[in-house]
Length: 279
Image 1 (tube, rainbow, N blue to C red):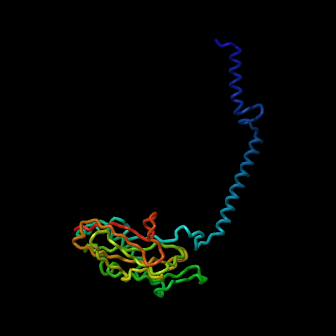
Image 2: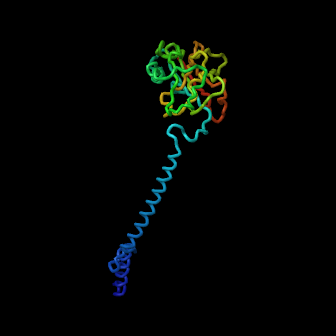
Image 3: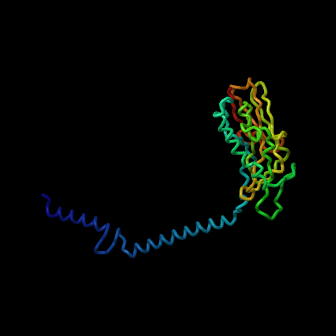
């Protein structure tokens, strides 16, 4: 049996443990009185309110330096990339099966709806071969030049709603990514090549395959709300010899100062896609 002294010691230990949480004699909770807790909570409340105020003030000052229409820093991407529609780097279909190429045709049709004359009527008929410079204008909202969908001819989807996929001579649309303030020096145009022994015949639309200067410069999404990139269409005139083979097609922007040979970025000024047409 435990001695009287052991029982007293155990009782004292339990009492000491309870007192460390709440001491009824001093009114302390976790070693602090009510006034002490109130003071420390008040300190942290003031401290964190001060930090929040400093953060809000810093953000407000930073926002004052920003322009809603023009990004402050624009030096990370000096040259545009090249993109294609339909939005796929592997185009594979059987020309005898409409269901197989329907996805590509639907993508092209949906993309070109923005270039319909009814949509482009609000844009300007600009002077070809000249930059449409609007820096001197006081209006922050800039005007955009009219791009005629009909200039894509056989690849416009107006005369052939299958964009050539039904006949095994598919169309691909190319566009440069938007870069604010870009003014290409020279006459940028598209040149495509197929990596095979026998060359593949191609048609370009517009026939010069160039991006007219009147579509430059671009002033940003908010300032240039109605802006649409100029397009170049490439129609691959494939023959029976080209069917059932995977062809690698590389398209580049040439004729100007835009880079297309950066080994670290395969899409800078160029793009490579594969196409396989079966019958």
